[in-house]
Length: 81
Image (tube, rainbow, N blue to C red):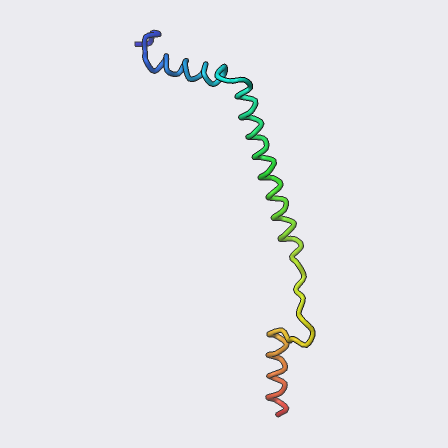
């Protein structure tokens, strides 16, 4: 125990060596992909904020009444009619 004969110790050493030296620029590629993911997430959050801050205008076709306007017209017609 505590020596260099433990199988877990050697497995950990092999994994660390494989990650560090296993491929050309493997760590740089992983970190680059991670950074791209963070940038995409931030851009998505900004798009969501601007979409909530500036909702698209509601356009009603000419001659169409809104539900509030129709209810007011019905109430006025009942009082006068």
